[in-house]
Length: 222
Image (cartoon, rainbow, N blue to C red; front, side):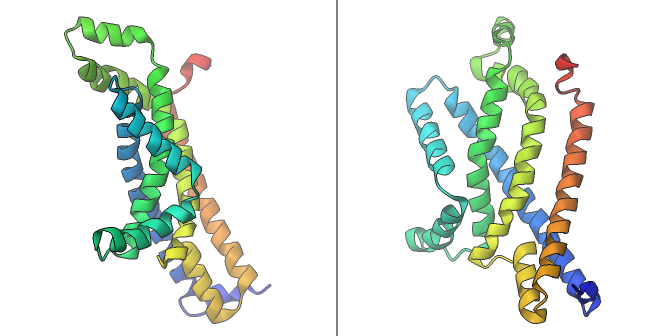
């Protein structure tokens, strides 16, 4: 193997650029997923049967179909169904967000139902409505408990972002393939790409551990 390819031209800089795109798409997709996740989680614990059904259908669809299929449907479906000439990277973010939103909602719902019912009763006794109690009392406590699985979901999203290459979005994996087509150094460049993913996700994991300790998540088990 010859890793000197990294020093030829701007090869390594282009891979770092691809890594930057991966971070951007993963982060923006996760923000969208978090918003969707909260809405679906609240929908699942809603007292309205119709909202519960809509939330369940959303979960059923996005947890039962592959991300690749969802990305293709968004990429080709938006122009056909709504006449929107949407950039591939925007479709990628939407696809990642909608896919990950289903899993984020499951995490948040689990955290919400884990909060003692006495917290809801206490909020109602203070004069808060059901939703005020959910937002001001239950949700803040649930978010603290949800930190570790949310970090894991973000890490999963950074790895799943490699599928954006299938809809022509340039990120680390697609950038690596383009460099391989130019240099024919397949194994070397794939190994470097894997190492960059490894470093990125270990940094994310470290940050997640720091946040977890700051919030004292799981201290009841220590």
